Length: 313
Image: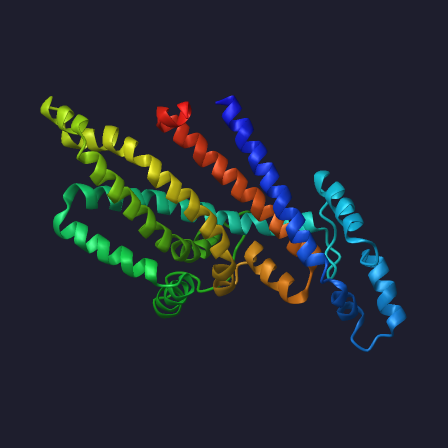
């Protein structure tokens, strides 16, 4: 297991380095126009050149990358070109919002997806067909439309929850919970449908195996067979799709945060991209890559704990 973790970490680090190199080249090679935007389109050429030198854009690209990478290794991702704020501080202020939405949606997806998938696989009949139809419809509807519908129904019509805005948890726990509920549901619905379908298919395949009939013939209760044996063996494919959906939800937060005016990484990414704030965009790319690396490693470790075959392989 130790060698497996080491290999996964090494692979993840190499992937992160590759993403950083390509991201840096693409962003900084076209960043010269940003200097003119910062000083004004009517500024004299010498003023623009002075701004480029201040930002380091007058140096070779490889030299700029080495300086950035050296700082990144020590935890310094540079400063925002527009606000002057350290990128690490900007991310630290916004990551808790995005992570709270993503982790909340993950918990909801895990619980609801497993429950719906198990019921559909066990009961079959009408329950299975209804689940299939609902999952198909929810998967086909874009996340931002679901978010707008939730805002209209629960925020503007019923007034059960705030339509937009975000209250930090340190100010009010109930206020924080009320402001993240609708974004979490909007993020989780599509992921729940995918996980439920995967659990259902894996459960049906596992229920047909010989060892399940053997356990039932020995008099074990059906629920015990399903939840203790069948669900554990069917968890592998479900975990794989859950890991993918967590990454999708983290990326989907870009749109959801815009709809609900949540000050998270997604909102910062949109604003920084429109402005051309290259250091902040680069920091968001690195943070996203690191998040994906951690999620993939955690999913692989959980699969190894649940399934001995994975540990052997």
